[in-house]
Length: 572
Image 1 (cartoon, rainbow, N blue to C red):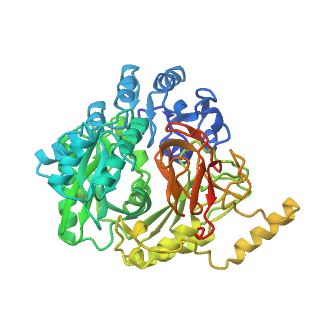
Image 2 (image 1 turned 120 degrees about the vertical axis):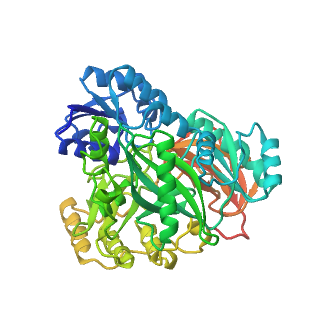
Image 3 (image 1 turned 90 degrees about the vertical axis):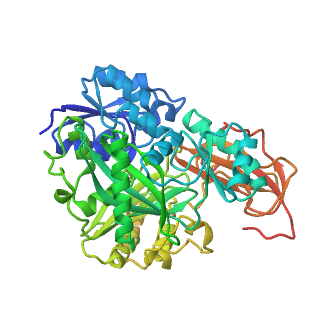
């Protein structure tokens, strides 16, 4: 079916498994790579061959080692490399080095990656095509003075954004001069650490927005189609948590404009293979604005697959092999058809260190799980904590029934030994704005809600617990709400703030001797596309930072700051 015979998968985890399965379905052999810390990762068992990559000194750097990855592909007679998402998926130099080695890069051409890797240039192209963009700086901002001048001319609130980035990294919304001055260097340092480019630009912040994105496929002849849209408005700190296809309650005329503009931009940029054009929508005014294009497969591609009946990763491989959209039966919007029902994806992530002692995925009609967890697996803390993607589809036009199916599936998802966000996901799906299909990007930061809803009583899971107790000869191993790993000894009478995940310190927000309130940000940690804050567990005086500075590596559960509590202030 395809002229490709062997593909190297330059990624890990669930997306590496997803690519391996798609390749197998086309009769294509696969070669996987893995950092030493990933030797027990499930993706190494789904490829025909697996090759260790790099050494144990820097696990993330291993997956970013372009010469080593290309050399492995050449040595193992691979005729293509699929980069997945994250890591090198949008790296123009990687695409060029693949071509130089006579290896097909499964994705857009290097020039397209370069264009969309520069958010300022991408916005300029959109403007030239008559596509509305968020009012913003026309060039990158040299310093905080330039940012202040833009803010004063435009008016607050504004959003600072990394010109070379995406995925929520190097982004901060600010409401006044003081916040801007505090955030500018932080954004720049995050961007430099994440993308090797500290360039920052600014945009007017669209409040109460919906985040709508359009899936594009294009072949090497220039034929381009869309597979409708997804709603990615449910976000936490600019990171997507829940995605929906198609977008519920979206005006038909407005949807058509978004789809047309996405196609217009993709054609103007000579986009080939798969890409996603993203917009912000202001429901109050009906205005929409282009924000970026991601020239790769997205984490949330699954919901489009479910409602459109198209395997997007298979299509990527077939297009890379030279097949046309016509040959794939996708040559026109008429051939593609309309979305069938609704699909919802929820991202299940680890929230601390631990080893999975019991694991069972939900199953049944309209339930899909793309994951890489198993009993005995200890997720390496160096990477994005995504453990599984639960995708639920209902073929009818009832969005509410899709929400209900997703909630039931979440209640059947059984993970023991490792703290996860399953309770949070249940609470989000039960939120009235989410159930009404009216969630905004600000939802999770605005609502005052305890995201701790427990699963409804499930006799099947109770049986699993009982049998696990019998087999292991002990009591049930409870999920770890917090890792007990400790990098410091906490002096008697003081409290320690634990790092919720392993990563790199991108900001130290306090100094020793500072007085803080419960919930204040102490440090900001990042790992891959995930960023989180270490917050004060109580109010009091910071007694120890222990030499932590920007760029330091920290472990999940490590105590990184100590505080002497104020007796008269409540803890959180």
